[in-house]
Each structure stands twice: as C-alpha cells, then as structure tokens.
Image (cartoon, rainbow, N blue to C red; front, top):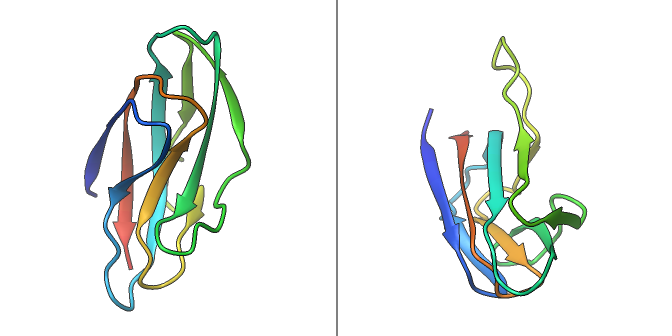
Amino acid sequence: MPIVVIDTADSGKTEIVAGVSGQTIRVKSAFWVVEGGVNSLTDVDFQESTSGDALTGVMTCGKFISHEMPADKEGNRSWFETSAGFGLTINLGAAEQVSGSLTYEID
C-alpha cells in the first residue's frame, strides 16, 4: 500500500496524490500535525484535485495536536475516496506547516 508524506505550509490546496485516469484513490489511513506559526487553530480538509469537491468536512486542528484516521485491522475500510481520474489534495485554511503521512490504494 503506497504511503505519501504530507508536508505543506501553503494556504489553500496542495496536491498530495496525483490522479490516475479511470482510477479512484482510496484513503486507508492518515495522520497529521499542525506544527506552528501564529494561528492556534488551522482548518484542514481533503478535496478532489480538479473539481475541488470536498471529501471530508473542514476539521479545525489545534497546533501541535496529532490528528489521526487509523487503518482498520482487516484493511477493508477506506475513510474516503476520489472520483475516478481525480487526484487528492489537502486544503489548509491558513499558511501553517502541516506534516504527516497518508496510506492509500488506487483502484
């Protein structure tokens, strides 16, 4: 199962997994930490890269607090998935460093 690093400090959308024609991206697990800056809270959500359609709701994340979407033991559950052909982006409400990783499968 591929792992991608989450490492961005840009406000707005940053693509973290490129889309593959005719394939969906299924997120199996993820964790991230908002590492610092002036804001004590930062909004984070995941979206499809081209359409901008929301894949999660906006999550208001506290600084230096780990946020996790754990994998299930059997590996059958996905937290969310893109539409076929779309990439996956992380969208930040402020220019704050966000670091972590994400596991996914392409199907």
